[in-house]
Length: 137
Image (cartoon, rainbow, N blue to C red; front, side):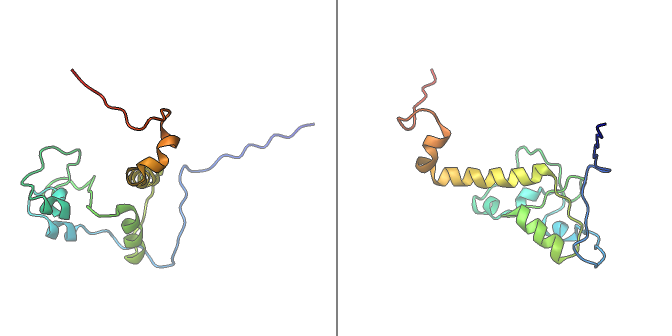
């Protein structure tokens, strides 16, 4: 006689408490202070100011101060780490999706490859003769 056991998770997510302290609500008032009414989140970035940019021509985000905050993006030099640290320090709930983790990994991998192109070239491309030029007519 064979016995077959099948284990299935009850929920698609894993939730656990890291502290007995109750989570605080997340307030967007600091974002509203950083932006002018109708301003885009990009306006608060140092890079935007350093390059003396005057407008955001196109964006996939609709995050504005007087707009919808459902998909709010907060500009940060290292958003993944800063988000985790801020959530822990200020007792906020933190929801991490697999996409968030993979995006953080791939962003750092891209920066590494850009900084060490010659060292990793043979591992990423099949041709051995270095860079190849492309002429478009």
